[in-house]
Structures are given as C-alpha cells and as structure tokens.
Image 1 (tube, rainbow, N blue to C red):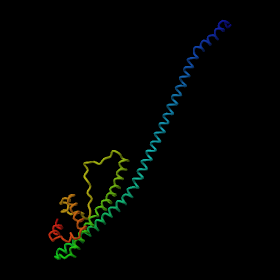
Image 2 (image 1 turned 90 degrees about the horizontal axis):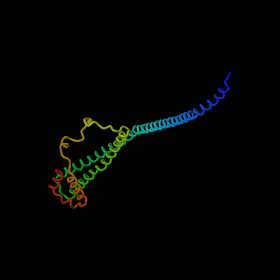
Image 3 (image 1 turned 90 degrees about the vertical axis):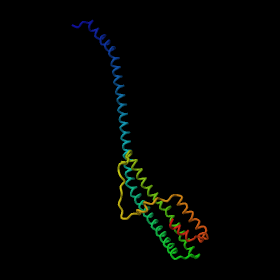
Image 4 (image 1 turned 45 degrees about the vertical axis):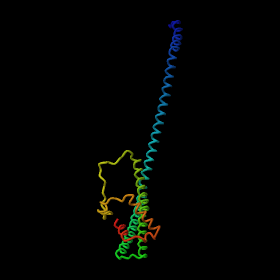
Length: 230
C-alpha cells in the first residue's frame, strides 16, 4: 500500500522542482529566441549585402557593355570623320602648292624676261600676294588636323576608362608605316624649320606689299632676287 505521507510529499516535490527549473527554462527559451532573432537579422543582412553586390555587379557590367558598345560605334564615325578631315587637308595642301608653284613660275618668267615696266611690277606684286594668300591654308588644315586628333583622343580616353592602369611599354619602338611616296624630301628634312621671326618677317612683307602697291612698284631687281633666294 502507498504511504499517505509519501503521496502527500510528491506534489510538494514536483512543485519545488517546477519552481526551481521553470526560471532556467525561461532563460533558455529567452536565449534561444534571442539567438534565433540574431541569426535572422544576420541572414537578412547577408542577403541584403548579396543583393547589393549582385545589383552593383549588374550595374558595372551594364556600364562596361555600354562603353564597349560606344567604343565599337565611335571609332567607325571618328575614323570616317578623321578620314574626311585628312582628305580635306590633302586637297587644301595640294591646291595651295599648285597656286604657289604657278605664281613662282610666273615670277621666274618675269625675272628671265628682264621687264621692269610698271604693269609687270604690279603683276609681280599680285603674284606675290597670291602666294601669301595660298599660305593661309595652314589655318584650315591645322583646324582639320586638330579635329582628327580630338577624335583619336576621345577613343583613347574611353579605352583608358575601360582598361585602367594599362600603359604602353616604353621599350617598344614606334611603328613606321611604309607609303608609296615621301611627303618630304631628304633635303627638306635636313633643313632646319623656319623660326617665328622668319615667319613674322615674311608675313609683314606680304602685308606691306598688299597695303601699298606703290611700295611694291619700287622694288628693285636685287630686292626680288633676295626675296626669291632668301
């Protein structure tokens, strides 16, 4: 038979154990809940970071794709524009050279004929003025060449943005492209370039000859020979 005293002691023991263990279980439950919340926050943050990284990567890839597309399209237009600009430079240079040669031949013929009348001197002055006018092609050709260079620099800048940190090897030698004809003779290459003072003196003489035809009429044969030989 069950002892009545023992039966009465069991509820008290259960109550004591429950009172002793309940706070521990409460603390454990709080710890588990808190840890689950922390893990959830960490997972959410990790997922957000991953989404941001993926979005950033997608944006970067899109930018690279755009730059490559522009780089493929721009050289075609730039090359076409640069080709037109350089072709115009060749045409302007050729026209100026023809004008200068024609005027020089006329002056040489006048010198050979020995004529010193007023009409011949005025014709000579007009030929000299035409030479100065033909020399102004440098302004037009300089602008066209500058535009062609700007097109090439634009492509170069885009390449530097796409592939940063890439520089040319200084040990590489410049590439020489063979052509069918030389644009400058060996004698011209050996001759030093004109100084700014020489160019200013030449232009000042042209302005004087244009402004005062009477002054041009006073040119002697020695002055003309010095001009052509100088």
